[in-house]
Image (spheres, rainbow over the protein chains, first blue to last red):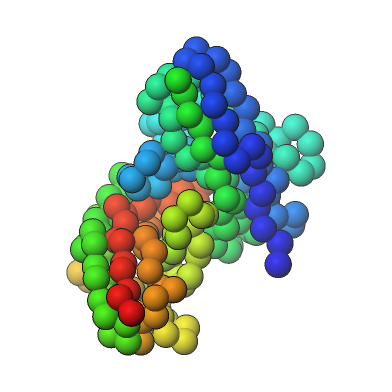
Length: 114
Length: 114
């Protein structure tokens, strides 16, 4: 059964550095998402992406964040000038079509900002 | 925006007993309600979902009920087994959003004692 994959599984970075988190959504899916989960807290929506553009974003997704689909398979989240409070698990998810609401999550990237 | 509250935050049951987790939502226009199971260090896994035009859905030992008037929905697990132990998250998708954003509840840690 196809699954969303993410790399790396764990990223350690210093405050102020830029990181890029990578995701490969399920191949025939058209909608892509990023969520984050601070340790012990709820999953929070960051952004959704469809047809090569952002379709919705939360208040968390400010100018520090950007997303890109650089090719036909990858979907990336870039975090510029990381802060300590950016430390969290970042999940990528994908949905097949607009009429299908099911979101399938990747295994996550644990980002640790020191 | 949508707000989802989930209760209880922890639930301990004896193997074989039933477990019920409840969520309330604020946006009456929400039309899709998934439940995710998250084992320690793993991805959220979609286990069951329900759309607003249905009152109940069942899949083997798990079922979800939806009360649109009261704006609450519940997860029911019967004949619980130790492998059901995990954190369960409910979520809601507001109809108004274009990006399929999910708003999650705070999670319920279910412990099934053998």
